[in-house]
Length: 85
Ligand SMILES: [Zn+2]
Image 1 (tube, rainbow, N blue to C red):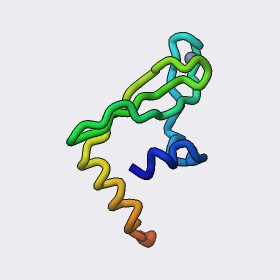
Image 2 (cartoon, rainbow, N blue to C red; image 1 turned 90 degrees about the vertical axis):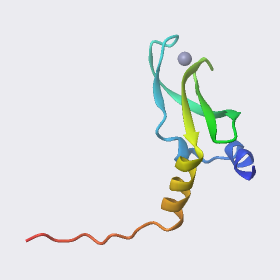
Image 3 (cartoon, protein in one colour; image 1 turned 180 degrees about the vertical axis):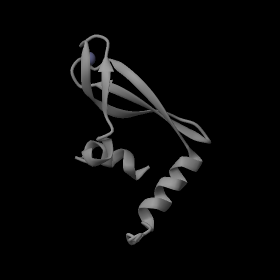
């Protein structure tokens, strides 16, 4: 699980999706993604408010999603813009 290590490094590009409303802070707060649970077919991530560290959301990533993500990042389809005249 090499990428768990990389989560401690600065890979914030992956977490930019991350501003969620926090009940405690009464505001949309930037959140941290934390791997909560690893199941055979999926992983569950917890979103923690960076202000008060409470959980503000969760996300499930299935094995299929991960494969898709890997596929899309590995071979990014370079779709040239087609000019429609
Ligand atoms: Zn908060």
